[in-house]
Length: 291
Image (cartoon, rainbow, N blue to C red; front, side, top):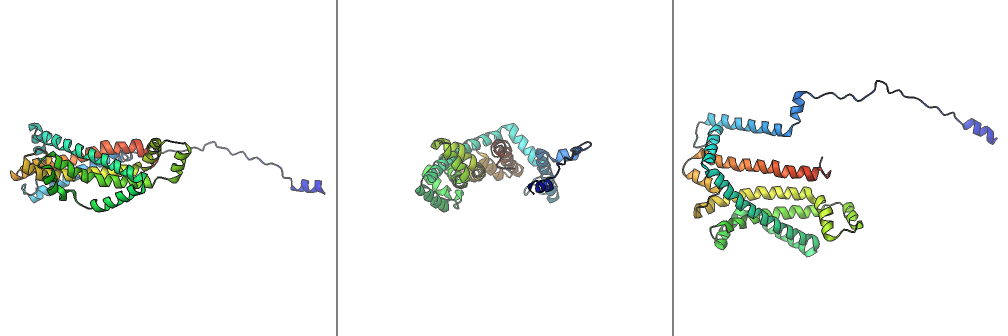
């Protein structure tokens, strides 16, 4: 009986040969338009060209250079200010102050975040300070800055630190708290030192949030700087971009006012695409945290 069952339940092995002849991956070549559309730099340049044309068209339709100069008149004023050296000098003056305030704000944000990540009282302190001072506009501190530091660079750096500190600290701390528990356990299992744990686990895991904080802090710093220079420059004869815009307005050279604003825009585009976007490509995208 056993032999009979084994005979009944035994099936012959059947092997099917599947022919792959003529089967392959067919990749359709992209057209010239599709290849051009895949170029991010080209798409952004096209957007800028369209905006410039809209600017030119609206200004010509309005027909009042004192209210809204044309894009071409702004470019001419920009070029003349560059050739004379007035605009490069004003830009360099502003950039020096901006870097001082931005660097000081990043340093304080790093120290505050480290304290908040290491202790509960530090986390409570960061939460309370952020709730108190983050909603406070930096420009509102200008009167105090003028009293404490006088009409000079120190007052502007003070308001820049306030503009940068809270957004960077808050985003960095949120990023640290959001690091995957799996990553944390991997770091602990490898026996990393405290510094190694921060450098190899926390910072890479939180870097998208950190980069966001850096971008926000940079934008806030620019806004605060121009506003502060409009006040400090008018009082102490400073030479930044805000003061350049203020002088041009007083002289009714409205194309030059727009040239100063255009300079701020161009610097913002350059930093965004050359610094932040490059940093994102070599860190966040390379580490596989963004598709």
